[in-house]
Image 1 (cartoon, rainbow, N blue to C red):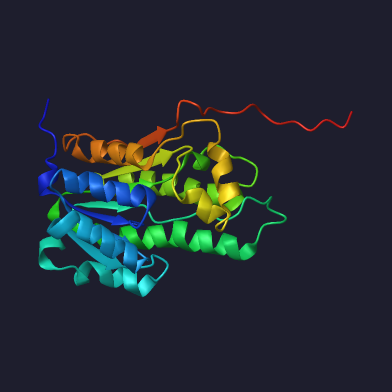
Image 2: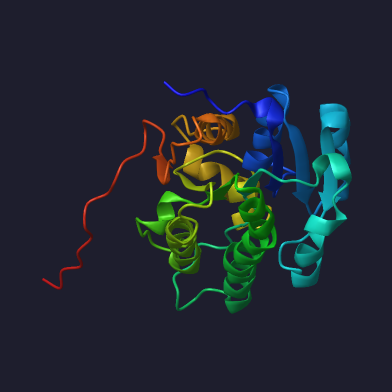
Length: 257
């Protein structure tokens, strides 16, 4: 077997690094000796993560919905962190679980701004450098909701369908460049995801996990690390993950009689 990619030679930029999957991915790569760039909106959490991980971590406060800030980020990185070899595009969110005819349109717009526009512009900002260097890896954090609809998933699921297709189209565009692309698509995972979705309502947020063992942020970080450290000729296109306690539901029917 060809040698695996040595994480010690990687510069890994992670968006949405202040909690959940993003923070776990930062810790996983830092543990293997990679340089890590933690990107997120919450300055206090970024600083805490930077102190935890030490000099191998650089923190950058950024909202991926800010187009100008995203475009400026690559040139703003300090020299030891300037050649990003792995981009983990993790920033995003779900808001609400109301049916489409009752949903808050502002919630829809926020999800589209972060999960679609923010994702696309982040990837676009770092691709030229990877292509020029002839090596790199783009990891997009999607969701099984991009393939499997559920009541109340409406726009959130649609944004994750975009993420999955965007990753596949990137793979087509990047053929022969040396840049790999992977879509990692978790199922039920216990992070701050539900707390954000339900806008701080802890009782509602805990309900999806009641009575079962969901995936953890560390499970997802391990999958990302595995995909990125496989030998350079191997590309994991899509990686879907669910807890053992989750599966697919039957078709739904409404009968009038």
